[in-house]
Structures are given as C-alpha cells and as structure tokens.
Amino acid sequence: MMDINGVFSDLERLFAENRISEVERYLTQALSEAEYESDREAMLAIYNELISFHMTMGEHEKALYFCRQIMRLADKMDMTDTVLYGTTLMNVAKANCASGNLLEALAYYRKVKDIYDGQISPYDVKFAVYYNNLAQVYQELGDYDRAVTALEDALRIIERHENAGHEIVTTYANLGESLLRAGRLEEAGDRLRDAVRRYQLKGEHGEHYSAALAALAEVYYRQGNLTEAQKFYELAAAELYDVYGDSDAYRVILNNLATVRAKLQQ
Image (spheres, rainbow, N blue to C red):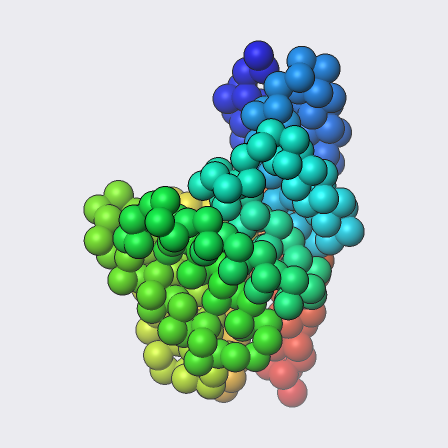
C-alpha cells in the first residue's frame, strides 16, 4: 500500500519551499503510483488534493475533471452512502461553486447533508464545515442573509468544540465577508479583525488568512479609510503570493491594491 502520509508530508514541503510549479507533477506521479498499486483509498486522497490545488490556482476545468474522476472511483468503491463520500462530495461542490456552477453546487451540498444526517451528530465539526461551504454558494448567489444564517449555524456547532480553533477562525472570517457583502460594514469589520487577530496568534498562513486580510481591506476601502485598505491589501497579496505564487486570486488583490493606490495619489 502507498504511504499516503509521506505524500502529504512531501506536499507540505513543496508549499513551504514555494515550489508551486512542481505540485501538479508530484501529485500526478503519486496518483500513477497509487493506480499501479490499486490503492483506491490513496487515489481518493490524491484526487481530493488535485481538486483543491486546481481550485486554488483558478484552474477550474482541471478541478472539475478530477471531480468527475473521483466520483467514478467512489462509485467503484461502493462508498456512495458513506460519510467519507459525503466529505468528498463537499470538495466536488466547492469546485462547482468556484467554477460558477452554483445550482449544481447546491445540489451536491443537499446530497452531503442527506448523507451526514443520521450518520453523524448534528454537532459534529463536519456539519460546521458543511454550513461554512454552503454559505459560500449563498454568497455567490447574492443571498447574504442565508449566508449569514448558515455561518451562524456553523458557529453554534464549532463553539462546542474546544479543539476547533482553525474552524472557528475560518467561520469568523467567512461571517465577516458575508456581513461585508450585505453592507453591514461595522459588524463585518469586527468579525474580520477578530479573525485576522486569531490567525496571527495561531501563526496560520495560506489562502484563508489572505482572504480575511483582503476582506478587511475592502471594509476599510468602503469606509473611506484608504491608508488601512492599502495596508491590508498589501498584506493579503504578500501572504497569497508566498504560499501559491502567481494565481487568479493574487491578481485580483493586486488590481484592488492598484485602485486604492490611485485614489491615495489623487
């Protein structure tokens, strides 16, 4: 059987060393090895990593391709009614959301909930992750009230778990962004400042931290505080580039930063 933990360790090292251009090739090679060894569980894990990686890089068609592959594999493994499959479908739903296939994403999330209901506690952290991700679809649909409700449901679950520090911070950040989109700037700023502070205290880095920084920058921009907006867009850009290099998300932040700088020079 394949040493999947070794694969994850190697992957973490590639990200830590900013060797982003090598990630896809490494995962593809690992997938070939898992296929050769007929290690379907390892294949499932690697497919999930490929989906997440291509989503982060803005390569949505590649992410959707691996979504189709992972669903075929899950069907062969006769696991389509398991909690693990529900978690896999969560990744598929996220990829569809990122690709703009919002109704398909909602349909997949309904399947996730159907699988989770009756198999895990309604207070399981997996449900909090589900509500967090569901809120992202509502955000994209412009239904910010439902997004806020879903995130508040997530918080009620997470706050029952002493060891759910990362999930709490992520939920604060997502809730702050939904409040921002709803135009509730004061509430959004409070949640996002709290999220940024928690990320910094935990020493966490990556796309979630960068997204919280960028959302807080937008709050300041919309409040007319251009100096703070510039500061947090710069932090967000540096954070995202350090982890993923050049990407669609990085270029969006750079465009926003350029807008702020232009206004400061007026």
